[in-house]
Image (cartoon, rainbow, N blue to C red; front, side, top):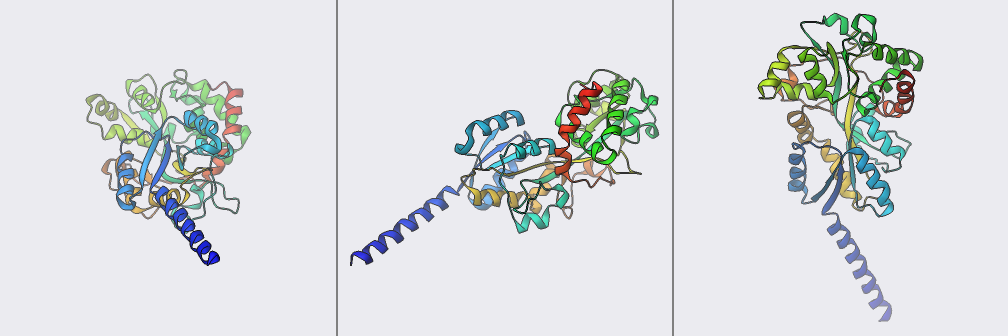
Length: 346
């Protein structure tokens, strides 16, 4: 009788533990460096479909990384979302992700948009893409003179080039791709040529570069594609006037293709709700969420079979993109920063 009672008690305890686990999985803690209001629709739709409540903490990438390191094993984070391969790779080397094997993610997300796979599953996945493009002033610059990233560093563009800080992750990733394609020596020569061609010291964000070209302060600038499309869709008169003065170039169409980066994420190392976290990542790879990235924030879906329905984005047309591993580009940021320091590219 005692043994039978003990078995019943053990079974009851086991059932209560399972029930508790399922109850805990009805919430998900997301640490996000994405600051796009349109992502609210993603979170709301996921909760509606699954019943899993989402708790969000939003901050810039540096603040999130510091918080995660401070929290350590006690961190409540389940999902970490970052923008740019350089930031994702930094979180990876800090040991903040755990590997995830998922048939859904493996089938949906192209291999070159996944974090390093050490046999246990990628550390993170890219869920949307954006291109590093060139905009130029149609009055003062010919498109054939700025058709490649390399051309921006040539003497013919002296005094015309504007960029944001070279140490910003968007620029570090671009330079990381140049290192991978052209080698460290050639990339350093490029960086020195860029410094010689600056119209002004690097400052501001991508939108500032676009307005600088429109105003004539700059002849040509680099920007992420979604900033440009955001201005195309803007109802502000000053944005419409600026766009009318600009030309747009897909760089390196006859060679390596345009540099493409990602926004992505992964499961936090100490995620208390791992099952729900993987479910959320798989949701982000679904058709509905992929379309949201396009319609809501002017990014391209990472899943190649998902069509976009964003007239402004679609109006840019098709382009040849580079196919470098996004994880390798992120890793190259260390070499990229050293190149910048030597070249005096602030």
